[in-house]
Length: 335
Image 1 (cartoon, rainbow, N blue to C red):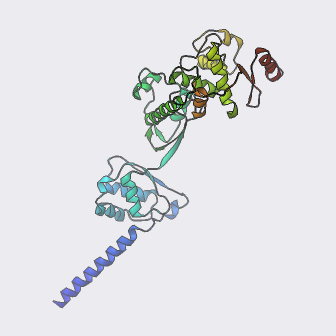
Image 2: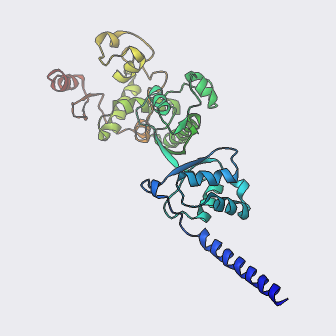
Image 3: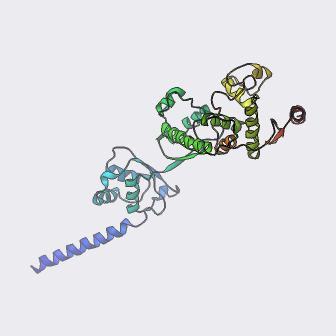
């Protein structure tokens, strides 16, 4: 009887030691194997439908110096094995088995930066997104109209409808999800800008503000000139004077533009030729940023009707045609 009691006590003590050791291990940082220690944050991917055992195996394959049996046992004992989410994760410094499981259950994946640049056209943006290795390509082969239908915006021209910004997304996020976020961001930014429109603005709708902002974006070489450029275009719209802006003509030429804007281009009528047609073009011509949106709705107060690039990124502004022609001779023809 005493022998049996001693054995039971020994077993209980052993179990207690194991339990204490296991509890201690759960809060110890996971070490990396020497063959991967040069990588600061090794990544691993848990595919959709993976079991807890497969998830543990992926962690070990990524470089965690721990038996996958231990991790699997912890996942099962925790009662959260079925809550582990698919995705791409990283073995960050200080990660413990406990915080690892928390991260997997919450789906705290590795995020990538996807940056959309001010002044990009819809085509520029698609090329950049299609070249990204971090995104899942789910729009290949679709026309611009079909893409907008996929985003729940049928019949809307895609140009200028996406806000240029840096978006943090998980690896393998579909391109359509990034576009949806960017489109919603532009909706918010445009609405916010429109709510601050100057009472004397000639713009009649948020749509017109977006179009003008896209032109300002393409015309601005120096940020300090942005509001003044908005002022010049607002003045012209107010008095019915043609905008006469090269970027709209270039946009209308599309793939036919070879980098050299010729006189014949300015004289050939088309919906985007603001030399032959008054008012704004039918759609935006690029993605405007927040500064250009504000320059469209709250331009600088100026009497200028003309501006010309100085060649250093800035512009010279003129109130009269004579002054403008003199500036053109100085900054363009002489150069």
